Length: 605
Image (cartoon, rainbow, N blue to C red):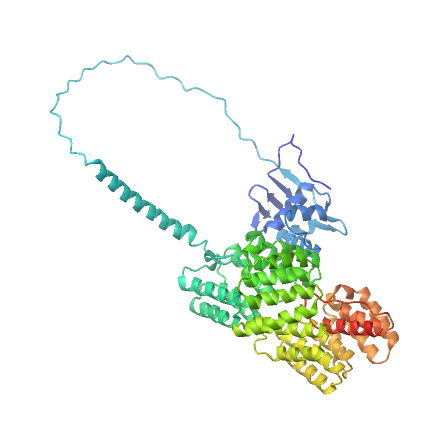
């Protein structure tokens, strides 16, 4: 449906239904006479539904009105906005109805509110006062001698005095503008569009520590950047921003602890941006949490140029396999606003999501300059996306060499992992195993999930060269690492157990109990059925395995990152092998073992 306003009627200034009053002019919402907080997108949805007067508003119309100039978000984003609207309306939230497959409507009598015209009294003239005859008077003034005028200074001197006064005035105005406008608006970080005023502190040393920490982390020294942020956190207890930035760069329980500390330091009068950034810091470790993308979208409404936030939203879409939405977000990032490391990340991901030509073109612009390690890393990602693994491997190995020379440990370890992947893809599994083992053993590998997955891939390679002891050693080491991860993050362990079953390792005793834990998360039902199907196949019960695989497909396994493992099991059960490909090489590395297995079967016929 299309909503329009009849120009012959006055436009309502608000709406009422139930105990809810919507003030369209002040963009405020009152429930039972009390004003309630309402986020901008939530208010837009409410106003749109009020304008419809109880009619159904289709999802497409809502998406166009709420996100007119951005990539069309997922349906989950709109569902979250509707959920927030129900919470905002309190007791009136029951009026918001979902019309399945169509849109939303208000199940209430919506009454438009019009501004009352101000009555104007008839014009009246005040009565004229009675006229009195004029009185003529004569004043006699004695003329005194004229006082002598002081001598005027010469013109050049007057100009010098005026110029000096004007200079003082300009300096005063500049000082006022610096302290009230320019200084608070100073950008400390373009990735988060973080301004000095966002810190909530006037301390120069805190702002300088945060600025330097961000620059140093952008240059690839994450450890030194972390130390500077921790120093800012310890020396200035008035701002939550250092703790929030630490939460956004750490993993597991460390990230949760920093997020909790940022929340504790959040002042009651925090700005909307500061409050949202701290809230997002507490959500960002759960990549598929719908509230994460809603919070990111709200932050981008306030700071649309924050490229790190837009990149994070692209990665959220990618975690949900929404590749088109992820690419759309990446393509909206101006490469001229990026740091060199940010440019590397954006170009590499654009190539992985299909924009290899555009990424190659922007890579050739020379903006990476003399950063040979970073340039080699991006070149490797682009060449891999172009299915040129030998060239990609050479580029990643050069990136490791250059990053090691320049003491950039984070970049060196990332390049080691990809050197191992492309070594296998270019036909050198022995070199691949060496690179993967090196990556897993690096002390700089901060993401232990990736280290676990590298060990799993190493176990797969050991199995195929007949090294069963090496296989079991790597799987045991991977499980010990996984014990330190967040127990609520089930996907890495699921992937490892699926791989271990497929490689023939003896199943762990509590595998079925572990499968029952998965059942508590509805989005993982298909994964649970796949795990039980693989277990049934290993126990020589092909019929039960086929039934559970069919159930997993009905439960949506093909819309998850475990679809590749499902394809391998289907091949085990007699279906022809299919072509699989993993790009980008994250967020779930163990998929590569399924891809490599399927490629080997296809080559063997």
